[in-house]
Amino acid sequence: MRIKKVINNNILCTVDEKGSEMIVTGRGIGFQKHRGERIDMSAVERVYRMEGKAEQRKLRELVEQIPLEHLRLTEELITYVKSQIPQKLNESLLITLSDHISFAIKRKQDGIEFSNPLKGSIMAYYPTEYHLGQYCLREIQNQLQIDLHEDEAAFIALHIVNAELNTDMSEMYEITKLIEGSISIVEFYYKKEFDRDSLGFSRFVVHLRYFAQRLFQGKTIIDTADAQDAMFRQLIARNCKQHFKCAQCIGEYIQNAYDKTLSEEELIYLTIHLKRINMDTEA
Image (cartoon, rainbow, N blue to C red; front, side, top):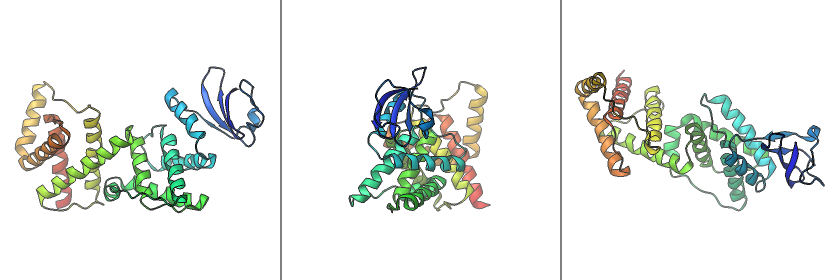
């Protein structure tokens, strides 16, 4: 392994025999070192490598800008997060979350704090990720003695959900707002408020989450030409008229707010989930 760039006394950007770039850290590992030199592997404490070249470049740029302890702490936090959720997380979470946490700490030290207008929605729609965000805040307090604002738990939760869905943060905000708008329509339509802590509500939110992801990424389920599928859709629409009408209301909201048209297939899936959440409520 040879040195590509000395970032500081404790961080090096290196390349292996295959030309793959990685970041290595270790106490004093970069002291009086130069580009092209081989490194002493016994001095390496941690290795950070991204599969994608673009992500690897972002990582290199990040470690030049934030304290190493923030990167190491974020790595520990992500290890815990991975142990608590079944979904595979996008590798870029290390970059985006390290960057966010480091910036949040700097803002706190400068006396600047941001509120999160979507906090209530995030708590309701992503409870697991929100609780993990709270865990992260406690660990930041324990390890760095930095007491970040509680709204940061919601920001961290969105980063985790973003890594689950392989989206970017701007899209994640749109997904959350779409879920919020859809839930408002559903509760207005049925004239009742659903229990945010119920399993049925959680299932419905998960469906909306992946539905919204498909919508914004242009991967919505299209109608098939299969006659049997068409008959099935007609059967559901006829036997679940009330819930199908609610699905159509959601479709109208999405058309007006996002200029996107839902297929009959997507409307039927929504209808099935709407029927299910109402059955769970009545049980």
